[in-house]
Length: 176
Image 1: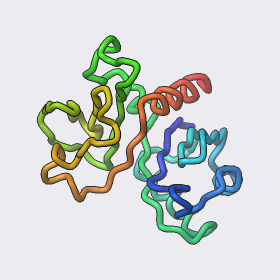
Image 2: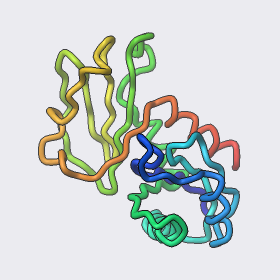
Image 3: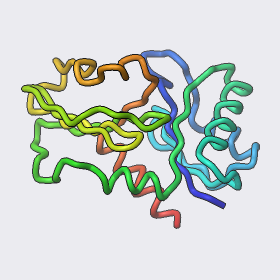
Image 4: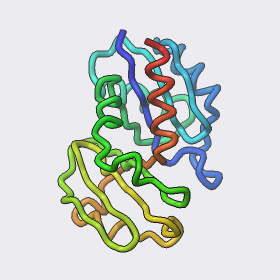
């Protein structure tokens, strides 16, 4: 069995793509996933699978959601090792975060190439499949992230705040 983190894109947002996490947990367990844990209602899962690759797990979860909920949802999957590496690779030191600042991670299905950039609102840096985002104090509601994304503006991604990202790591590592 391998451990994975699965992130569902745009579920339970503004009343759209409604997926009851308890029902999803049960559906995934019926399809052979084990130790399925959901975290908050925005499509965060930690689970075990006999499937051997992130892409196989993503396809299987996508199919379950399609069959059970009649929704076509993008699913981003990371092995335990790769997910822990996402946390370890955070290029912004802990001491850079202030009370009114935010860190976020935009996660992609494939590696992205976005150079490190900074303006008056935020700084970003890409590593592998992750765009690390450090939003400066007071800028969260006015941030225009697409200015950083260049050719990746239309690439499918899912975004999590850093608190959620860390909580998923805690859940993932507590199951080992």
